[in-house]
Length: 441
Image 1 (cartoon, rainbow, N blue to C red):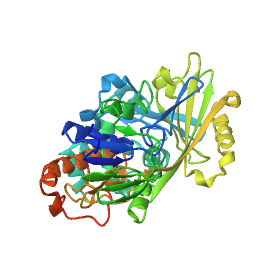
Image 2 (image 1 turned 180 degrees about the horizontal axis):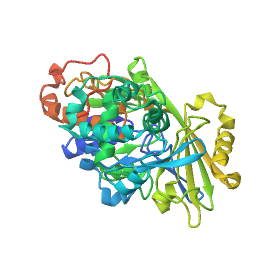
Image 3 (image 1 turned 120 degrees about the horizontal axis):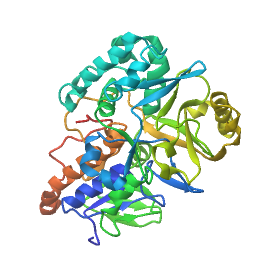
Image 4 (image 1 turned 90 degrees about the vertical axis):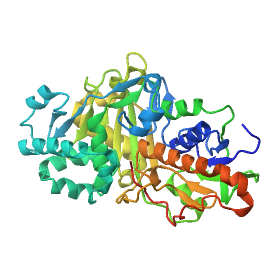
């Protein structure tokens, strides 16, 4: 890499790594500045007593177009969830299966209390609608809240309460389902077209794979940034770096601090991990709390999806708590254990508590996704922002935002080199006073 990179990227999360990889493909030199000791941002995996603990329950949707184009799925050695869920209603679990992939399972539970027969037919209608036409057309459709969209589809209160709230609430980290209906329809399309998977080496393998493709020395770890201006980055150490362009690839809160703007709203989540000798259920699927009581929204056994998540003879259990601020931090583990004891019996008391993660700013809040075509995070001359807060709150959105910014920079870098004194970099674009979410294509 050149001693003076053409681009400085702040943050080694998925957006920053995506931006770097696309710049590298275009022959543009860069340097990533990462405040922490590892790459991945919010997508990381820790090793604890032989267990793989993702920092919060996360999955990879294999239909994501950006992931399909950028990642090597065979190298990630993906392991798939069962396409469906077990939903707890009253004191019993009921199977909800994808009727297009498991028609026999779906037919066997057609009269379960998780919605009416008409609801199950409406799911098929909704699936057909979101799969019709080009992906980008989803973002041209009228927008409302996800809850209102479900009600407008004619779904009963029963299926919204028992299935959609815990399922989509866990996806958006938004149990009230105030998230944009455009994001809902995009993700419903992704769930319908592909698999839901975990990499054999944990979700942290996703950013690591991208990082491993970058030139040696591309990432400077433990390098906090305190200030940015056009073409200049100031480090916590007092060092100042210069480049032709600067990309802020942090979460929305940190980006807003660096830009001295108002931070976008975000959702917090907690994830409680337990180790056990035997799993509470044998299948590789998600369990949803259809009752809406207690702290647990959803539960899974990652080691049933990929055996590598637990050491031999053990199982890893992951419980997700939405809006953890409602509970005292010191009591979350005991409250979760108490609720799961009611689900699975006294054996839960013997489970080993491995770790509880409380992830602040886990996902940006996205009540609206503008229709604007081709938006990307251009702030001002030589300064860009990327991240899932500028696109869609998803792995796909993070990867896409990095690609769009890299392509914009690569397209202008030659003219910048030729006419730097005239400051024409990015002048063909209208600066955005806000870097709110752009359109997913």
